[in-house]
Amino acid sequence: MNIIKGCIFDLDGVIVDTAKYHYLAWKRLSAELGFDFTEKDNERLKGVSRMVCMEILVEIGGLSLSEDEKHFLADKKNSWYVEYISGMGEEEILPGTREFITRIKAAGIKTALGSASKNAGIILANLRLLELFDAIIDGTCTTKAKPDPEVFLLGAKALNLPAHQCVVFEDSQAGLDAANNAGMLCVGVGSADILTGTDFIIRGFDSNLDDILNALIVQ
Image (cartoon, rainbow, N blue to C red):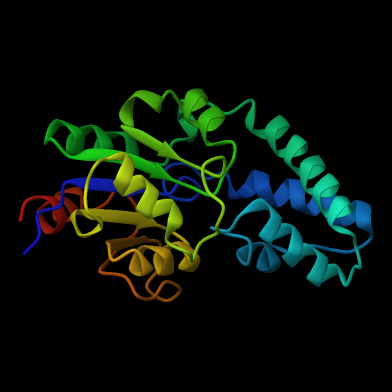
């Protein structure tokens, strides 16, 4: 049995719920473009890169846009998103998350962020969580979107660990597929009715903390 020496965390939906801000920004953009963007549509955008999200939005709206237009609109959406998240504070950290990361670091486990977000640094700074991560791999470091394993393999490399000694915490199916593709253990954060291909499922870090540690860390 492999001893887990590193934990890699997705950002949105695992550490903090920024999905609502993404949704507001994409919905604002879709309204400007003349069509509705629903919460169900927003589920398709979780865990993937900004430009992949833009492609999905184009599909939903039945639009025909040039690459330059797509990049312009994606940048506009991001400026609105950054405006929304600029007021975030520590109170928006999901329950139990800081305590869990602090505890595994005290146990000698290395930590990394593995997120498609290009705003991860801004968010972690606002949440005062930067010091809890040994490495940050985000959308500024990667060229391939989840379910490609690039982000998690880069995370393991940054921690100087082999993939099989890392466990990923993810709330999206694309992220869980990426963890599996990387050859890592994966913990789904959410509902077993939605997430598949996980080694463990947890509701969040405010529940069964000891169970997570015993199952993954103390082996």
